[in-house]
Image (cartoon, rainbow, N blue to C red; front, top):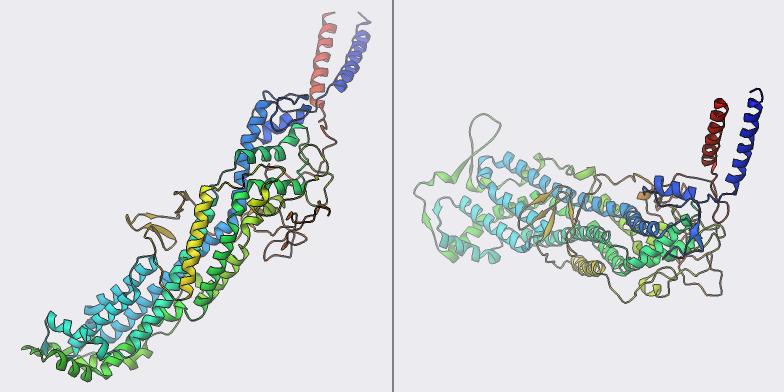
Length: 635
């Protein structure tokens, strides 16, 4: 028994060294793939091999030896499609929030401007005329309601709205100034027929109609234009990747995993070709989109200048008061002309209404005659001349300038998408041309980067694209953009635009005109089916690096001469390094991470680099030592 400890020790050492030799001879290079497949991709690793197997059965990641099975490849193809949609959605985030927030801001501004103008008029007229105004206040309320309905998209005629208002005003003022008479409907119809000849309000109605028409047409078309841009972006989010795109994405993003190259990123130019193939349909939108942006800017210029809605709506009470003053000054002449043309009416036997009690803060009773009631022009100074407290504490000039700046940055967005995506962490940076995944191995990518646009993807080496096939959603959005561009040009020239009463903006919400259904914070995409999506309340500050629009680093336009070096393609309008639009003081953090991997500076060590299998080795050694100890104890 004395030799037992020595025997056990020797046996343990023998097993230990034998196990080390056995473990070192195993090919465990797929263990790292198994871990990534399970923990980071959220997929079951039951059928993931721990050592390479033949890759002849794979459809996309074809290699002589691989860490992926056909079942794994199918799951990775499905995963790559979902991740691509998420990547595109993140890339859309800033431009979507820009159009959603600016549409709501302009709408809020305009609605509050109208509301404040109505309140100012009401305060001034109540203070000046008291009960008499209150008895006739409905006509003023209806005027502002009609203006709101027009702005919301109702196909009412602005000129008719103002004509009806001044016709009604003439009837009421003529009746008040001639309260000693009785007027029936036929007589009042005769009065209104002579309105153009009488010109009772001077040139105020003509000037106001011209100003209101131009300003309201521009404002309504502008906000509708912003809403169309918003809806186009929301609709384009629903464009799904094709089967060929999913194959290309799988090859780019996950085939390196099958070779044990978990930390090797795709070459930048390789990523560009793949994304240009997958986003070929999106690029078809670019021409119509840029024309739409330019038309939107033209109307914005009108709003800053002669069609400024703020200078029309804010002093509307003053303009109406000027019209009434004109009537008061020429009231006697107007009445005489009416009596000559329509005849002398019957006298009112009870002429008590020819005098009106004035509501004042002073004690006692104060009365106006009918003519005196109209003479209030010098009382305008009693009211406040301050600007309305508009939405967001801004004014029209600042608001429109902000919208112009933001929409200008959105130009060429649809052809910039591949650059926005590939300049992120999904692909290797320029300069790492020999240390990136080229679709087959970790080496230089040799193919040229294709030009921008669907037609140029006919020979895309990574994604097969049918350049003659249109996408239904994209075609509808191109039509919508062309239609709104035409309407914006009409608005720029002061021509009224008709709208189909489908959905309209109401203080940031959309209301179905037919049903009146209000949908809080819900955006409805029209023209390509309906889809609802919630948007951020405050998109001003990006919530992540994915919220920024970055300009491409010039990593490929594909329009170089074939004899030139292909590793550094540059977009015509690109910059040498990606920069955040409007922020050049710090480097860009890429907009997203496809695999959601933490920053890792480790490199894969060669193609099919193995992951240390120390844990498996220790388990094997531990089991052997347990057997030895048990054998010794039994002896």
